[in-house]
Amino acid sequence: MNARTAPTPQFAAPTRLDVTDCAAARIEARAEANQLDDAELYLERRGGKTFLVAKPTGR
Image (cartoon, rainbow, N blue to C red; front, side, top):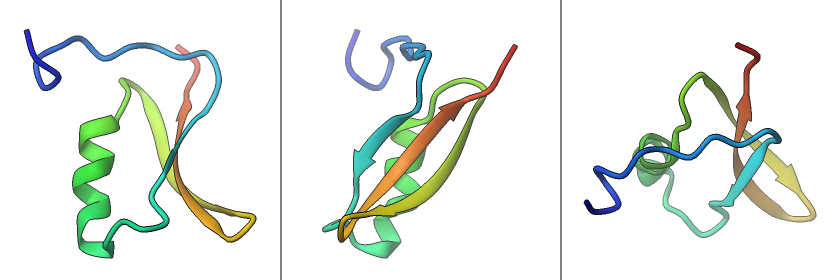
């Protein structure tokens, strides 16, 4: 089992991935690689940094 085939962990709170230095063309690939099941994904700016946020939705 590697990182691509491993089961995706479930989180109770929003998770943030720093994408400040990530090229705009690569953000979609980063989102797909870090997407959680049933999560809402969006970009958030905080303190001069940009984060890709995965917010779990209720089941």
